[in-house]
Length: 91
Image (cartoon, rainbow, N blue to C red):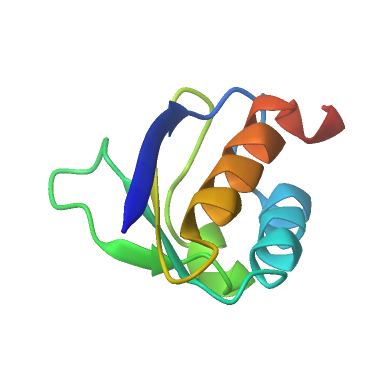
């Protein structure tokens, strides 16, 4: 298992397009990947390969999230998604 905590920086958070971009990138990896909204009172694991679940995760600008992966390419998967989030999705 490998995980990293990051803060969402793009102004719209993980709305439809960024959530879709994140999901498409997550699906490139064989590892199981989850996201946790650490700003919620009771954070739950969100499947990073489900655009609907990501959009329902209440992830806005400034939200702290934890990205966790389990599997043979877990480090590469997490680091790639962290880089994508750091890019701000071009917003």
